[in-house]
Image (cartoon, rainbow, N blue to C red):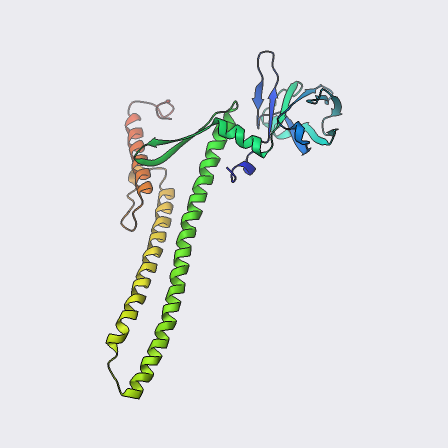
Length: 291
């Protein structure tokens, strides 16, 4: 959530006030509201904004004070300052957006955003034995309902990848350090043995150095296996990305590493692709079943 919150515009809600109910707006809002500064007691309180045809507006503060202004100007309510203007990007896309209307504004601080999101967020497992989860979010606006789960899943995956690669890199660095240390010890030992052999005319030292050489070999094998596993994961990711349009033709090789999640994901994708191929025999590509 700490990764996601700065990327989403959930710090303010704007709703169109109707006769029966209020309708929440998001990217389809005809107005652009920017919070320049806000007093603590103004958070999570309702501001009522009435916009007229001549681009003037009246803002009713939570304390009941009226402030008049013109679109494109900033206004002050005590120490709080707001900038109100038309949302030209939204009005360009939808020319029929109504901006002469009455709106309700509400601002949330970070703690309130967390509370609001967690209250409507649900995370559960799809199946008990499959490491896949479902994320759902309830919101009055459909774009918010789609945006938050997608960004939360993306942030979770990024964090997981960083953690895994971080652990692997730490392991590789540790092994590199150990190999250097062992190499130095081995060099010192070889030099000492060489000197001893010269002094005592000894020619066979295999038995004395065998243990240290075996340790170095084992460390090199461990390092090689780790690098092979990392390369295999990268190759699998690239392979799946290139062939995502038709997973039925893919045949990834899992011999290089054991990854239950990747195996189950590809099995599920292949199963869904097969079902889609069968459904195309009975339904058109635009049917709800295929979608």
